[in-house]
Structures are given as C-alpha cells and as structure tokens.
Image 1 (cartoon, rainbow, N blue to C red):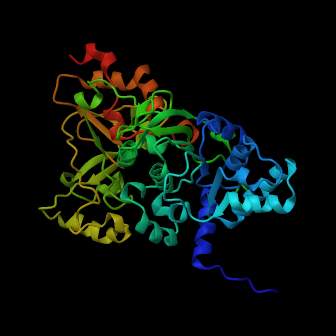
Image 2 (cartoon, one colour; image 1 turned 90 degrees about the horizontal axis):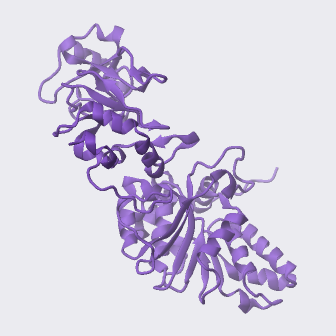
Image 3 (tube, one colour; image 1 turned 120 degrees about the vertical axis):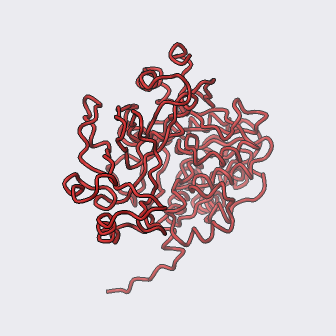
Length: 463
C-alpha cells in the first residue's frame, strides 16, 4: 500500500477550518445581493474575501463584458480563498463560464488564476482601499473553536474587537480596506448584530460605516454544501443579507446598540423599559448535580439551615407554566464561615467531580456565589424558549443554572403587572424582532434582552 503523505500543521488546520465553515451561497441569493450593492453600475473593482467555489465571482463576471480571451476584462473581479480544494473548484467554475463565452481553454485557465488568489484574506489580503465593491459570504466560527495554528497567527494581526468570531475578523478587515466611496454586501449570521458580546465590534465598525439594508434569509434555501461537508441537516445559522456603506451615505447609524434584522434597524425603545421597573438577575450555576445541588433524599443527611430549595426548568409544568414541588436542595455556604462538619464531609467527598472552571480558592464555595435575594416572590424565565415564559416563584426558592430571575424594582410596579407585560402580544412581537434565534423556532433569552423590553404600551400599569 502506498504511504500516506503526512499533512503539516498549516494544511491540517486549513482542512479543519474548511470542514467547519464551508457553506456556499445559492446563485439567486448572490444575484440579489449584487443588485443591492449596485454592481457593476459604478466604476471600481470587486472583491470576494472568502471566495469558496466562486459563486459570487462568476455572477459578478457574468455582468461584465468579457470579450473572448481578453484578460484585461477580468481585472475588475478578484477573490481570496484559503482552501486549495475550494480554489481549484472556483477556478474550474470560472473556466467553464469563460468557455461558454467562447474563450479558449488555456486563456480561460490563466484568467481564473488571476481572478482567484490562494491565500488568507486576513493575513495576505489587500491592505489598501482599492476595491470599491466587497461582496461575499464570510465564514463564521467562534475564535475559541479555531485550530491552534490560526489562533496563534490571528492573535498577532487581529484587533481585540475582531477576535470573538471569524466573521467579526472578516467584517473588521473589509471595513478597514473599504474606500470612502465603497460598499459592502455580505451574507452573515445575525448574531453579530444582536449579541451584547458584539457591542464593541458594532461600535468599532460604526466609526466608518452604517447600515443601508438588512433582512433575514431562509437558511434552508440560501446555501448549498460542498461534497466534503456532511449533508442532511440545515446549517446552524440564522442568516441575514446586509449592506454597509460609509456613514455619510448609510440609512442608519451603526452603534453598540443591538440591531434587529427583522425590518427594524436600530430599534431603540423610549423609556421606560423593563429594566426601569424590575430587577433582572441571572440564577447561579452551582456545578454538576450531586455536589452543591442534591436530590431531596440526599439532602436529609445535612443541616436544614444550610440548605435552600432549588428549582430548574424541569420543575415547571410545560403546559400550565406552573412550578411543581421542588425536588432538590442547594447547599448555601458563606465565604467567611466554614460550613458544618456534615456539609464539609459531603463536599470533600464530591468536589473531585467539579470541573476546573468551577473550582474556587475557598474550597467550600460553589462556582458562582448565591447572591439572589429570596425574601419575596419572583419570576423565573427559562433562557431558551419559543416565547417568554414567566414562572411564579414563591419566596425562599432558589432558581439555578443561569435561568433568569425577576423581582419588583424600587418603584410601585407590582409583580403581577410585570408578568402581564412579559406575557403580552406586544412583548412577543418585540422578542421576535430582537432576540437571537436558535434551532427550531427557539430564542436565546438573556438578561440584557429582558431589560430592554419596552413597556410604553403598558403605561397604565407603571404609574
């Protein structure tokens, strides 16, 4: 049997990255986006920073006059692509397009080589604003999930605001190389527009560009997958098409504020918002079950004074949104007082199962300190749902595992009024416009999102 040629670290990293990010855009979506950026109605060159198999490049060339074997006629269109296999596929696609136009094979192959550059756009791409049009479907992948090879390289060249996700890095670099009369049209995940963790990126980009168009796309019809990517499941992305222009030309400023992709750009509620009338907190994560969180039968061996009833979403009746009888207890310790011998004995026997991220220097303390005030009724809201589900919590019950916890604020608004606001159709419509989307119609419901819910329509309840 022939010996397999071992891959070097760079080649292996490229293969891993390509397998995780290769998701190509259908022709119909490409054509609409090229229309939105006005290609090629104005002078200037176009670049696709992540060319893949050349979908954007071929459609961009199709709109130009490319006389037979005229290499100069291709000079307005360029693409960068890191993966050698994708480069080969893209060049083959361009060759086929040119041959249909009557080009000879040798010249068409040379033209394809000139159009698609094999290299890393983030490290080897253009550094100056020579591309008036930027169009493409940049890859998305959390920085922490990148192969170590790329992490070490990108840490040296990317600013802090661009290190959250590979998509952030491409957006930042595209904005940096865009000239004063430039325009960017891209297909991207919606998360950089919505997530609080992307606020600094939005603020940074907003120093130069604003939004001229943003709209959701259908993930099931907007992409196709190369042969090397597993088929049969929809892409785990909620895509949008977005057009960015210099701030003076854009329709909407881009700031650190979240941007709704659902037809409301830069939706900002007038005060009051829910954060003005209620206190919204995150329930603590206390580590794996059986250490600081015990089933009721296990808890009977420990002093009741050091326990508090604890609930999670599985304690809620999903049909009635009502809390059942708590079946677990949490051990509540204090940093300045050692727990009882019984609790110490239990913890010493179980703390070996605590993952590294949950270990504390004060060994008897849980990963996240219990700081919630439990002396009055509250609302529990599950972090993931198709709607906001406020669940009544009696006083003295501790929610756990990063669910949301809401109590009355310092004003006169009752918990009943707060619950009515959260259950209202107006709030649900706002949620659909502003919440990050997950799989199968679910939303990612976070504390910052809850605090921003407008309550203007409920003014009779808050005065």
